[in-house]
Length: 497
Ligand code: FAD
Image 1 (tube, rainbow, N blue to C red):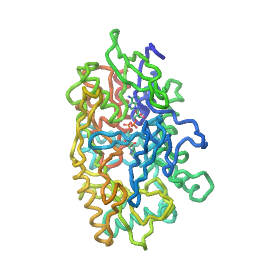
Image 2: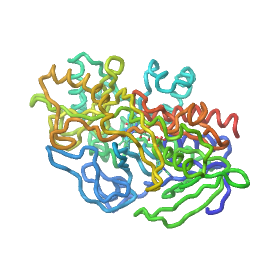
Image 3: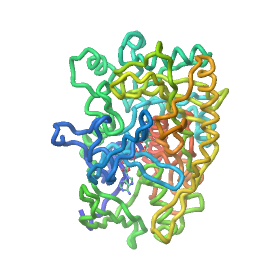
Image 4: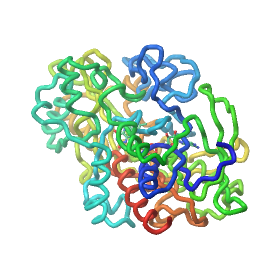
């Protein structure tokens, strides 16, 4: 409520925010979580909470009047359409050189993502978080995160026969024929539920093409894992459709936090001020970086250091499709949850997930999301003219990522006698180089913060989300974000409370 004084405020309800809230509450601290997106706990007119990928509606996008689907075209035709402006679930946030996709709502990115829950290979960890003790991470915090998130791997026997993974088996065959290792990718999707979807005994989610705009069944988002545990402590309150706009030192100690309440068309319906002893920035890499960059530049938090806004990367995301021969169909029924990847990280700097194209028809296409070793890092800066925060990433900076992905797909195409698809991202365009799903960095651990996420310059301010990670994790990021949050909050609870 307006004017309240609280011990701990958490900005955002994604992975970092949920870990912080649960562990603080378990330690006896009352926690207020503030989330700009909706609660996503009430069915719409069609009886479902979330919209389908094949028929996006107002629920699908954050305050847009037209969809901005990651695959903008099919068979050369644009597939985007007009929708009513609404506080929908997926934000396609445009910066000058890149569109950054993010989840909006209670559960953050866990609502929209593919659930691929990958722990990086230990040999790569030193390059991901150089100041963090790998023994602690692999001995304690990665296992804790995997257990808390409900991570599991597909039953390999079922994989061999499931109709919905024909596309993944084709992906494996092509990888192996070119001598690339194919690895199963763990996920938080309930694999037993998916078996029942394939058997036709339960309502379909992954097998109905649900992904990007939420999954009505099967996926263990944070709504089913960390959040119920946090609520069960009785110490965690969550305010959806509330957006933090300012944090500044309060005269009597602690921090004054300004919050806007939003309507479902994005209008500000109320402005509130509360005082918090501790504030945890968990608004995601982009959300936290934008807030901190603006607060430093406008004088609300002038003592933040010069590392704020720096070290941002795209996790090397690039997408592409390949056209298969007519004797290599990938299946009309495709599970929306990817289950395997091609690992060429050590030799070529690319880890490529075999992704679905859940169109409901046979496409003879193989589709891939690659995570690559792209060295480019961008910076957020405050723009006094617009009052917003810019990011100086350039589209041309995707080239090292494309080159890395080509170490896999040029070879596969040569071996199979196949070509790239040119109709998925425009006309005659091979590479999806305009976006990322994996924003990382902007308030890097050990630079903008100490080695546990305490912001330099202010005691009681913490960063606990993907902005701590300097731009790349070599695999999908949320397990690392969760594990790092578990590590940092352990220390903070033990020494700061
Ligand atoms: P987030 O999960 O982004 O949470 C931040 C929250 O803060 C959001 O809910 C946001 O609405 C809220 N917020 C922001 N600003 C404010 C503010 N000012 N006030 C109040 N609230 C605010 N990763 C994987 O590991 N595996 C995958 O399979 C995968 N697939 C993906 C697919 C898609 C389409 C997308 C978009 C992402 C995917 N990711 C995947 C990435 C993963 O979801 C993110 O890395 C992860 O969610 C980031 O966690 P976080 O805690 O840093 O922040």
